[in-house]
Image (tube, rainbow, N blue to C red):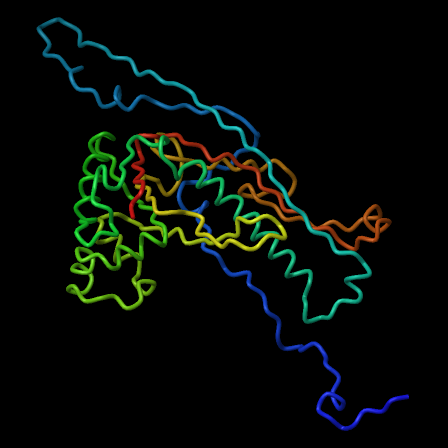
Length: 327
């Protein structure tokens, strides 16, 4: 039997540190529920009424009346649209043996449930971007170089550009004004280096840390209620492949009108229909824990399921301006 001398490695047996774990799941700024109002619905599909803005804002119906004549009449036409809420889900389970033997510091249950919800939120944001954040969807598309000087160019005039787009937006929508602008992080960084923006913020001095600029300042500069930053980062690589961290939104931008709440006679550019009749679902999202005999027979101590049921619907195409190739 070999005996070890009193070397540093011989007098200490390595153990797992109880005060340190390394996790890289962050609090992402997911935005799918921050842009358009959520309409809670009890049926997976249904219809809703919509009206013609051109007809509602047409002049010329009022006429001068001669004695004993009746005024002219007009009609108000309507149409219907529909939604269909797809159901999405993901689950994790915890086997009895692993849970019984796991180090407390791992906190496996909380960690896996948090990761579960993180993946669900990424899915919802991806659906939002694939539905609304692209060309060919909205009333107007603008493109860098073709329609304006790209904002990565020192000669760019983003304030003038936005002012023009806002005026055109208001004109084609009969007075309804753009109130929200969605801007990806890369574009925000370029704006913080633009001379026209810097001149409004601090007299032209360089901004050392663009992240420190409150977006309310940029909203005030552009004359809108809110600037929403799209800065969520995701890994688009397949499982087991080298990670490819990427901003979920590229160098485009969306100007839109979105009311605080949806309701009767309320215009909106987009809506999220949240299907709530599935057990446990509220605002289109549910998290449920299952511990039953069938699971125990399989050696599973608990299964946690997350579900989402929604339809992200374009309802007012003219109430949006999409700006592509900003940089």
